Image (tube, rainbow, N blue to C red; front, side, top):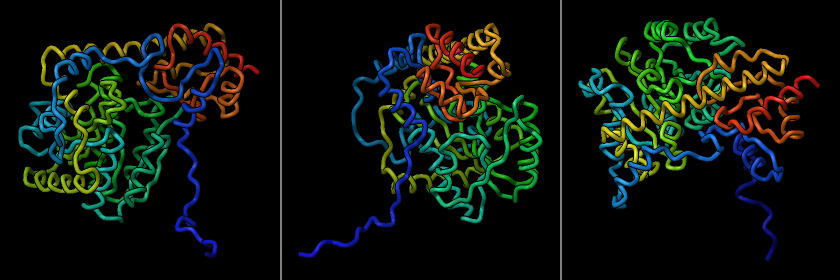
Length: 404
């Protein structure tokens, strides 16, 4: 028998691994006695350990005898109702008028993919998706994977949101273009528009007939108040009456990283349109995953439907948010006390889990090679990776690296 001279996979080229997950892999393999992971965006407690929220513990105890049957295609009904009420407000017009179509999704990433696929059905391929520069690393490939062309616009300056570039991009985009907005705690810059700036953005979105997708991964963690962090979503949907999409995740806000629990929701002009959109969402879920996973959805529903557990969760959000703010302050104070060259005010002005320190790629690599401190090449750091035992060490190593 002759040797086979071809492969069915000859056209497949090697794809480099995801940078952040590869960074974590390298960190885990590092045998150094002292090392710090400031790369992956997961919340850690004061001892650097994963934190199972007390509210989640209570919810898991409550649902421990749940069955393992299939969920409906669109997801756990109680989860979908409670999650949409949470993000839009129980008494909002869009809820009361039944203008929200929703489906359970595989966390924020899955919700974005479902939203993109739904919009491809509705708009076709001749629409452009606009994302911020910088942005979450997965935004581009999620929307390119469903066939959209993706463009970037400058989002941040050293001192905040680049509103001139932002508004110019909105004004220059073709009508019915799609814009991906970070609802709060912009990843990775940490800069968010103010309420007044969101109103400026919303006015142009409405005037230019643009379609907004809100990536809502950090609601509640930014300020410690879920309702406050949902301002932009509610303003667009309720105050100025826009059709929007919201891609919601409970990975960060409830610490359910591995459960992959999210929601994809569309606000439509009428109840009839919402019914049609929801029927299409059901079709998309059916051919993609058939049925969503149940455990995470049951946890979220158990938290939100119980007054006492929900109140505990709100306290847990405040705990996480305040610890993040405390670590920002402490790193800022340490760098300032050391007299480290650079502008460190950004640590106090940016919000949420992430901050871009403004270091060069060479400095980032030096911190990893010499001091075993791991961060993204862009010098984005995950603030929860800091704690009282390592923040001084991190500051000293940054100081030595910047001064060399």
